[in-house]
Image (tube, rainbow, N blue to C red; front, side, top):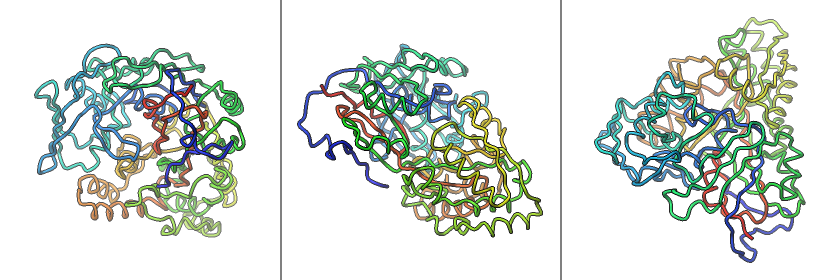
Length: 502
C-alpha cells in the first residue's frame, strides 16, 4: 500500500513541522457532495452514508486501526476454540447508547440477528453466513457458534454496527435517526442541507472526541465546495478524487492527505439480459476497455488500473498483467462478439453513480465500447434512484464504486457468490461458489492465497464485472485541522482524534 502522506500545498511543508499551537474544542464543518441514502448501518450501501456513520455514530465488536490491523472495538477481547468454530467475545463495560441504556450482550445478539434476518435485506448478511447460533451466557459475553471455520469473521465484524435490541425488527427508524455507541451522537438531518453530530459526553474512551461536534454540509456543486474550503467556511473535504485534489494546487491554508484506496471502480453487468448473458460478450467488453486511458482521462492520473483485488492487498492481489483481457484489443473484442453470434450495434443503457469521477469514467467507457459496436446511453439519476435500481438489478450495465477491506472474502463472497447479498448482477458460477466457500473456511495463509488467485482468474475476464481502477484517495483540509488520518476504506472514524488549533 502506498504510504499515507500529509503535505501543505501552499508552502510545501508539513504542519507537523510547524510550531505547535494549542487545540480548541470546536465544531468541524465538512462539505460533502451528496446527501446520504439513509443512515441505517445494516441497510445502507452508499459511500455517502458510510462516511457519515462508520466509526463516528456506530461501532462494531472489532475495529481497524490506522494501519488496517484488527483491534478491539466494543469487545475488549475474544477467544477462538481449537476447531475455530466457536468465538467467545467479552464486551466492554459501561458502554452507553446515544438514545439511553447500557450496551449488553442482548444488544449484540439482536444486532447480528437483525443483519441475518431476511426481512432486513442487509447487504452485510453474507458476512455472517457461517454463524449458526448466537449465545449470551451473561450480559458481558457473546458466543458465536459457526457451521464451519470462518477466516474473515473478525474483519467482517468491524463493519457490523451494534445497535439497541429494540431495533431488531425495525427497518425504518435508524434510516433517519441513528442510535449507536460512537464518539458522536446524531442531532439533526436537514434534507439536502446538512447532517449535524455532536460530541458524545458519555463516550467510553476517555478524552474523546476532542471536537464539540461535526456538521456534514451537503454541497453538490464542486466549485462551491472548493471555494468554501479555501475561504475557511468549511474545514474539510473528505474522500475526494485526484481531479478535485488538483484544484487545490497553490491554495494557501490548505493541506492534503492521500492514500491508495481499497474501493475500486467497475462496470457491472446484468448477466440475465441478452446479450450480456453470453460470456464472450462480457469478455469482449474487457478487451475493448483501455484502463490506462480511464486512469489518465477520468482520474487525471491519480490511480492505477485495477483487477479483482486492490494492489494494496499485496499478499493476495494478482497483477493485472497476468490477465489477458487487460491488454486492450478492439480487434479481439469484435472477434469475440462475432463468435458469440451477436449482431452489432449492441444498444444498452449504462446506469451511472452520480459522482464526478464515475461520470468521467462513464464517458470514457462509452467512447471505448462504441469503437467495438456497443452503443451506450448514459443514465445519471440522483443517488436514491441509483441505489434503488442497483438493489433491484434494474440495469443493463452500471458504473460505480465497490468498497474493499483488508480481507479478500469481503471483496468477493457477498458480491459474486450465487445468492450473495450484493450479487445484483444475478451471476451464478458453481466453480466460483466452491472456491469462495473454501476461501472462507481455509485458515492456512498459503492455501488461501492460491484459492483467491483462482477466484481472481475466474472473475477477471468473463465474470459479471469489468474491473477498472483503484484511485488515489485524498482528503483536503485547513492547515489548523489536526489529528485526522485518512483511511483507505473511506471511514472517518479518526474524527474522534481530530481537533482544530487556535
